[in-house]
Image 1 (cartoon, rainbow, N blue to C red):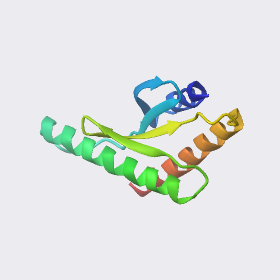
Image 2: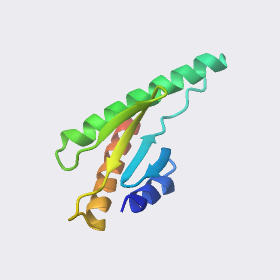
Image 3: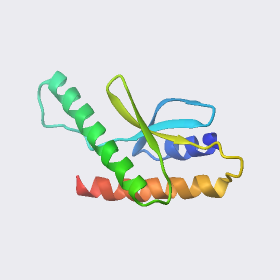
Length: 114
């Protein structure tokens, strides 16, 4: 079922898989709109990372605040990512689909606010 969720993330160009799927864990992030107006490449990369991290923090808080699903985060190499784990013995594809729908709804709201 993690593969099913990973496929959904991969198909949505607003997101990316941050690290390869490992068993039942999918690590992903929402890609923010680019910081294009900065001329200094190092500063631009730093600003984009900070912005991506902040947007994903907000996304995770928004998702978890609903109580419909609960996800956790990790920071690896300074990159904030959202972790989705599906390992419950009673989990079905409909639960994965619901989780993805919740992620998409909240991502849309976060991106509109940017």
